[in-house]
Length: 96
Image (cartoon, rainbow, N blue to C red):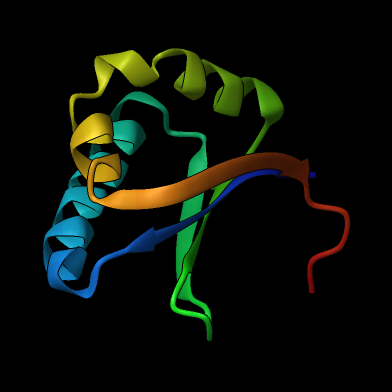
């Protein structure tokens, strides 16, 4: 089964367009160096916060990308536009 890293955070309305552009650059950079990233889903919740779930083929691929996070200058630039962030790792148990 695939694994995921799920983030929850807030983004100010005034920063959303820039955040989406930076996030897109970050995703492209991660995929270039770590092809195990299968898809990424951003959802705005009814309370205004976002969940951002990154799906990986294996835990090893996700771990390698997380270990290399400091090599992606896009990461701190993107996350600088968020607040109240948390991240959780998990394994997909059922997907239909």
